[in-house]
Image (cartoon, rainbow, N blue to C red; front, side, top):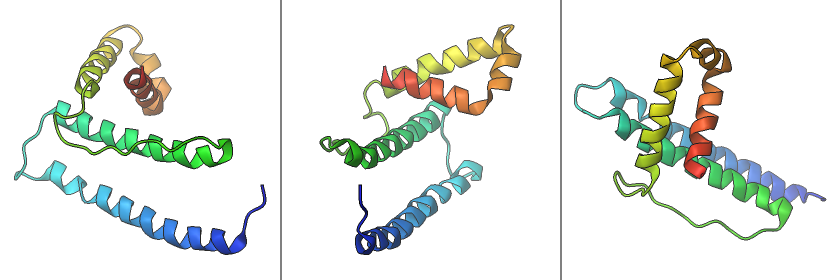
Amino acid sequence: MEVNEQKRQKFMENASKRVNNVMHNIQILEPMARSNTYDFTKNDVEEMFTAMQETLDNVKEEFYRKFEGRARSERKAFSFGQNTGVAENINTVSKEIEEQVNSENTVDVVDGGIENIVEDVTNSINE
């Protein structure tokens, strides 16, 4: 596939700005975790990050669709308690992780790294 350099340059400029904005907006969440102003549960955190990860996965998939010639994905909005199935999947995956950590396979979970746990969570949510 031949790339139009003028369009690519425009993409690079706009994508850089947008990615930096997204990164900034994610980074400003961090102080909320350390603040005494807010109170939240582990489930709230899991729901929030699951929604963000799903959005990232959908956008990434949309970029790859250009190469596959497929249709667009639908837009989603995040709201606590509005994401049907997500909370149930989070609870299930949380219990599975807890069981793995408490089992004899603790070393395997640690050796596998957080990437494997995130992949397992993502796969469970997508099922």
